Length: 520
Ligand code: FAD
Ligand code: DLZ
Ligand code: SF4
Image 1: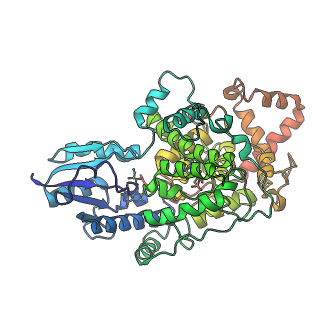
Image 2: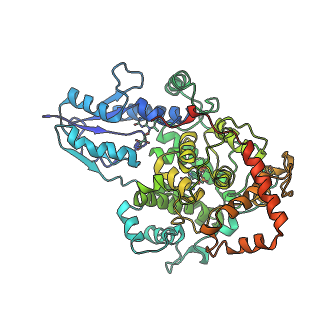
Image 3: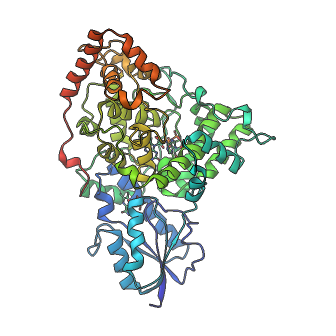
């Protein structure tokens, strides 16, 4: 075939400097972008997530065309759309008779499997380019992990600081003398803390078209479209980032782990959807934060805390994902088998903390890290929900969710399903932690101080139920051992009371209906 080179660009590859674009010529190439039914429905993605991805794809295609590229854009409602990446690539090959196909590797294992088969499906050479939008390559992470018995993020993060030179002092040590100011990221929030709400962007005509399409075609999916205000172009994403650095970053450090009822944004950056789409460059964000420190505008605990999330956690989970796949997807070290409770989809629970996090998730397609980890995740861990059910929920409900970042966070960090390769112990907590870090408990039906009985916060008895159930697996863990001495010090009737309270509560949980399950 002697036609143009085809360059498929996937929904989270919206970057002008994408490796597969570099070295191609505008008159010798056709960019292929595909809105496909399979990708929009394999889990019941939040309506805002679908609208964001499709709108950002359409805006990106328009920018490329304005730059002089030829874009073959397949819309979801095109009558000939076959509904899958592979079938659309084959159809495009028939139309264009390409001399070659150039694609940047997929961020997700599932999609990469499809791409790996394209060489056999097509009559032209297929070139798969490494995605260099991450600071550490997959090989860098493999090299770092090689021979280590423990894969703690902290050591990887230090290497990333050294590699990039970010927040290093003149001797090459960490700025301020410590690598990590996590201990200064846990201030208890006052209830009157109310940073100004960031409105985001009024949807333009193109986004409104997409929102209408999503409202019509995905009416049975989770979530509301009402508050859709995401940035859908690089320009908007940069406009959203700047006020974060000037007005919110300084307090991000102290209140990183804080939770307040109805305060859905607090001091978080809200940038993860745009970073993951490829609209923002993660290293540039770290450098921008560092500038705020050197200018004396933001303290070290805030700047280091923000940089740690990106240079540390984000890079780490990506490397971890590719190191552990595909086993990570099916790992279940604690043999958790329970169905996801229905209220994760409806928000109907009298547990105020959970209800508020699910409300925010429904309204914003967003919840911040501690809500995801210590409320929604902690509860799923304690009651023993099966990993695939939890994974699919997180993959569906957040605007920033792609398997490469969702799966390590859910399977390894939240559920300890990998048996401890990522986390040194399960992030299990009782009401004490939630009461300390939030204002949720104040007007909850349950009391965080009561341990057993009808009014006792379910997290209290579930915590002990979890520890008791997994004694064999966890007791030898040095960071947990003390928990079992406390349990053993209680008298037997007290222990029994805890277990009965938990069992009674567990019996009230209604499982989610089959309609929410992953499309087979
Ligand atoms: P900020 O609090 O402002 O943090 C700054 C940036 O750091 C984020 O934008 C993000 O890019 C990065 N970051 C922070 N924590 C993590 C982390 N643990 N892993 C990777 N990157 C991180 N993040 C996603 O992008 N997609 C997901 O699907 C996702 N699923 C999660 C599931 C669970 C169970 C948990 C506990 C966390 C998950 N996270 C995920 C990480 C984190 O919760 C979100 O990145 C963050 O809440 C996004 O909001 P923000 O941009 O305001 O983040
Ligand atoms: C998540 C998603 C959705 C909802 N829709 C599309 C789409 O129509 N077209 C597309 O190119 N990508 C979409 N995505 C992202 C993909 O599911 C997947 O996450 C990326 O290709 C990365 O592997
Ligand atoms: Fe959540 Fe328990 Fe506090 Fe209620 S009392 S908000 S259920 S932690």
